[in-house]
Length: 389
Image (cartoon, rainbow, N blue to C red; front, side, top):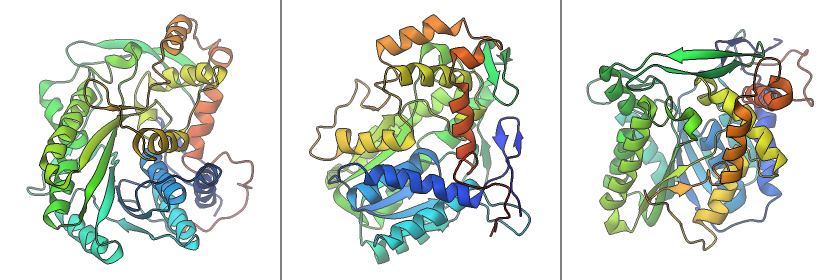
């Protein structure tokens, strides 16, 4: 079947298996081009099929020689319908890592369920005995309560008042003003339930009770803060409340595992094109401008460069883990540099539909978005039939 990108409301509904495999290979090639580092060796990644979770897995495997077990919930393909990008990514990574002599497995299951935790723990015992790193990188709009079955749904809204700002439609290349109504107070708690740290803690408790955590183990979750420009819809909105809970959970986990000398951290990462960020109003336009400025300064990074720098310079290789006043690792340090943000603020008002192409790097944004789904690679002939299974 010939597969083409089908984009609706900022969401791509299709994926190309060969393109996804190529994207994984390119990240592997980047890590292999860098010096090896002494990092984790037995890793559980909860949500390792795309974005930062996948790049964490690739860096730890091919940079530190780690065996990895990934948990993610992906839809398989059929003869007429592609699987999700994460399904193809998982398959490609597992095949390439195993070919390199590394332990690599993916469990396709609901990472929020107690049953999945039990399955993962049994597999950890069989593969590793214990794990020395848990990367928690789930990105889901909904979460079923594992005890009651109640389904929590998150929302991305400001708090208190209507938020109005410029945004871009990447498909049409138009810049318009968007207004987002404030969240109802009843929408805050479900968002925290989905995107906060509750499930992260459930995983750590289950792993500890099963005695599969190595002494001195580390666990990471990922967050974002961003500039004042996006603050109302992100950090000061419903998602911000969830991220505050996630960061508080890191401290609770560290206290919970102090007998094992374990550590839990939240890494605040750079704004990048992910399947999640692409649907947040204002953010795609900000990212397009940010990319242009950071490229001009020679400090632009993608997911794999971010994760490689974090593990090599901020966590492993004898590095002293430097935290901010809130106990977070700041991997957004280059994005939030004063000279970068001053330039963002200076250029923001100049962006219109007419100046979008010249004043931002919207082309890289669109290219990165397509590549998340396996499209836009010059090495692939997309006019050819491809096996979707």
